[in-house]
Figure 1 (spheres, helix red, strand yellow):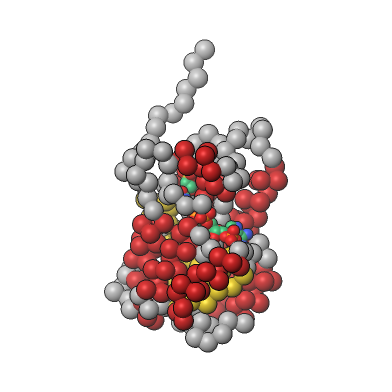
Figure 2: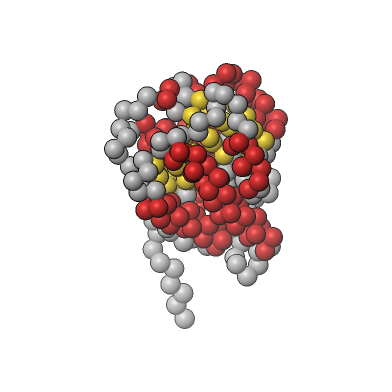
Amino acid sequence: MLDPKTLTVLVTGATSGFGAALARRYVAEGAKVIAAGRRRERLDELKAELGDGLHVETLDVRDLAAIEAMLAGLPEPFAGVNVLIANAGLALGLGPAQEVDIADWHTMIDTNVTGLVNTVRAALPGLIERGGGHVVTVGSVAGDYPYPGGNVYAGTKAFVKQFALSLRSDVQGKNVRVTNIEPGMVETEFSLVRFKGDDGKAASVYDGIEGMTADDVAETIFWSTTLPRHVNINRLQMMPVQQAFSAFDVKRV
Ligand code: NDP
Ligand code: 8X3
């Protein structure tokens, strides 16, 4: 296994959910972690909790220039990022395509697609110059399986999956691993964001379900990045046991 102490990990979307759990997991194992997100107070709390192993950066992934400036200005010992976890993302709404607010679609595309490619494009040359590393993208089961109201969110995650697979081909021979992690239902702030702060609606998503936790996802990502260097997990799909598949929806007349 790869020694986590050799890792300098940049995690986007680290102010809650998977990202915060990832920061905790890697710091606990002696890695250096850069936690990035928009909510400064959350980053400050994480820094107070995790101490010297953590560096925090206020960042909106939609802003390519800000990502480039952040990477160029990272202080020692955080400067040599060799693991990028492109995790920042969101869903907004669960309505049918014909009724949704198109501004929500634009925000999802700007964050999950443009923000993710901004992050990867900005970090990749440095990773390669330093001898290689690992890019983890956070996709979703929604990238494979359609569900009502998934529309653009699902589309963005299908993009993430195909982008990650394609990236593997581009970096062939550069000692860069690429992994797309594709979780199903995980109770984080994801549904609270999707339902715009309606905590009753958000909580009902997880009613009666032993859902996966952010720690489950963080553990899986940690595992994939500490496997021996010759092993690449291309895609990994994970669901709670209580989530499975359903039949096609056939409307009969
Ligand atoms: P959370 O809402 O708990 O976390 C999302 C994180 O993304 C926050 O830290 C948020 O930080 C950050 N973020 C959102 N927009 C931006 C932006 N423009 N720039 C920088 N950071 C941003 O949800 P999860 O932890 O569940 O979600 C993490 C990822 O996992 C997302 O990509 C999501 O689509 C995906 N996912 C989630 C699943 C689930 O069921 N929970 C299942 C499958 C995939 P801030 O607002 O402070 O910027
Ligand atoms: C989040 C999981 O099933 O709500 O990507 O789309 S799901």
